[in-house]
Image (cartoon, rainbow over all chains, first blue to last red; front, top):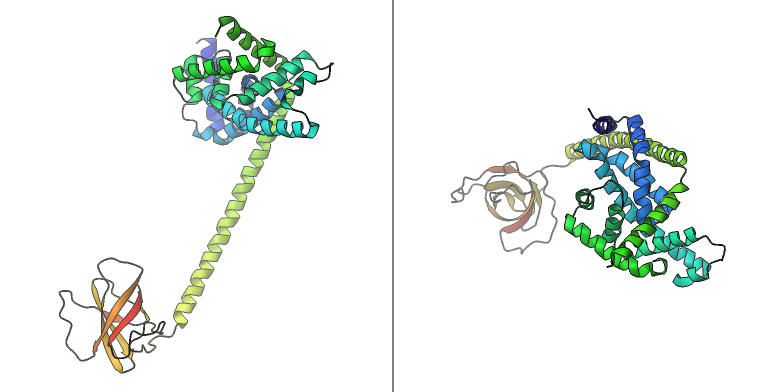
Length: 187
Length: 172
């Protein structure tokens, strides 16, 4: 038996045990998949703290619904779908939060240009990506984030998005077109 | 779109993701998730406990309602006189086809033919024809059934004093 097959069997065992109500088994799944979930959430939201909130919500949803998962071998795909949906919900919260900050600071949308000089480039890039991702329609945001996630085939991306591979590719194409405009200062 | 631009966008995303993830304390995140799961488990248990209490309370309430309904039913006056030309509430014993209702009206004892139809409906408004107690049976294809009036309190104004037609509301 190959190492990857053994790992898959172990994961399946943990999923089955979680379905039977073993919280310890689910905790192990959390440890195994929290990095993967964070990678996706950060790509979708551009910000680690928003992503961390999303990942927590996603694991709670997964915990509550794991009994409904029929194909236990497809746990990762199922979990990533939950993460993308949780990230879409988080986008709404992030948008509102951004609006509140803007109002509180009395700043306009393009005021990032007059931000403090000591602001790090990384911080500016994070803000720019976050703003750009919030402006993308949800399917485009999902597609561009999932396509960039290592180890996912186009078919799996389409499965997570519940659409055809062609449609997923189209969303990526459209997302890149928009990001080209939104992130032109960084290209 | 130029391949170069496409790659640059992907690179920006990778760069940002790497920088964002570099600052993540994975143990802290794991603890936060575990804590959320514990809270969820606790609230699930709490909901289950409350659901049990609610079910018991609902059972007691239902039993109390049934008990009250039985007591009220037992104490309900029967055989109240039905005035001719008035509406009344009657309870049918037979509920198939036409039914014959025995009632007491102002002019004495009488019978009423009620067409209750084939369907078993809960509440129906019927036209009742008062017939002579000693008269002939109505000439209909369906045999009439005897019905005892359980309650006959006048509810509405009549249709006219010089007619022997009565509207009654029938509960069955």
